[in-house]
Length: 178
Image (cartoon, rainbow, N blue to C red; front, side, top):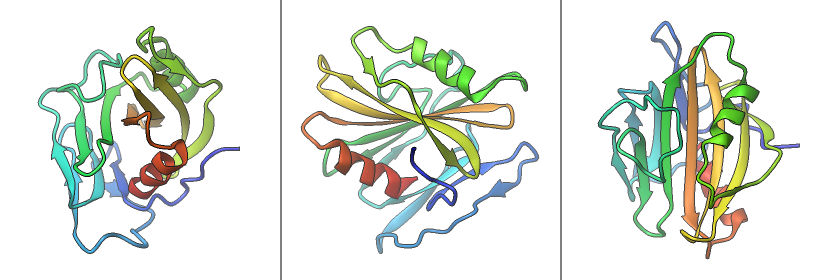
């Protein structure tokens, strides 16, 4: 069992031909929302207007998890509750599997971060994806992680929130953005 994102509400990913696909439109968005298109990573999100946006300043070349909002990641922060969504992508060989990508990311987590295991199957923009959670008691945060492949691009989504919020509440917010 897992999440079903067969028709994401508000994300589109550019295809390798440069065309943008978006199988679903937001069914209910806040009256004041804004779209963001990532120039580096080729995706689009529609976010509530209260979210601050910081575009990545450099490409993500390491393929390593580097904190909740490093400069190579597009970052979105909810100004009302300290939740942050960070998104990055990196080129991978065409024969890379989703399981290999997720396992590689799993190995790069800091030692003080506890990942759930195994990941759950889901979809993003009609493509297979894997999702799992993590907790860092040291940083007092929990993370919903989503790994996806789209062509020869591997995506990583990190939804970081304080440990004081419930996972159910975090999942609902994450699902509403995705």
